[in-house]
Amino acid sequence: MTADHVAMVRRYDEVWAERNAARRLDALSKIWAEDGFYVDPDVPEGVLGAEALSDFVAASFEEMPGLTITAISDVAVLGDRAWYRWKATTADGQSFEGTDFIEFAPDNRIQRVTNFYDE
Image (cartoon, rainbow, N blue to C red; front, side):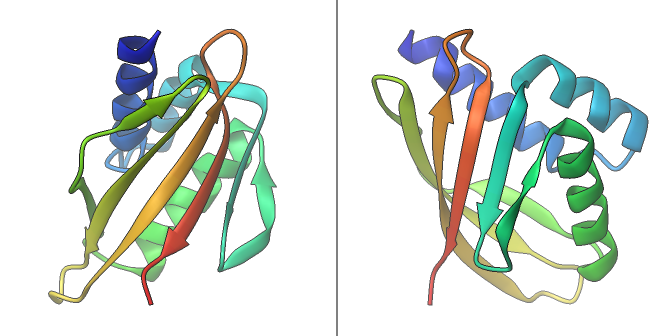
């Protein structure tokens, strides 16, 4: 199951690189649980569902032109949970890092992502 979880996280990373809304939503439909939930310090109330997450990604692209996100650590898996570190860079060269904690549904799709930014 570990390899499946790592593959699912990598597919999630690809969502954050997809600029086309239809393709992004299609990718999410395959990896995101129906009641999948994303939360970070900027959206403490969270984002529920694939469509809302796709909209959040689109808003992030608008807010931070040229946004790219790159994994900077391997994905560590423990049972139905995983975590990894990433670095985000914008077109003007600004960057920030953080850690995503992922929980998986019984069908291996992503149930929850909790994102923390480095201070």
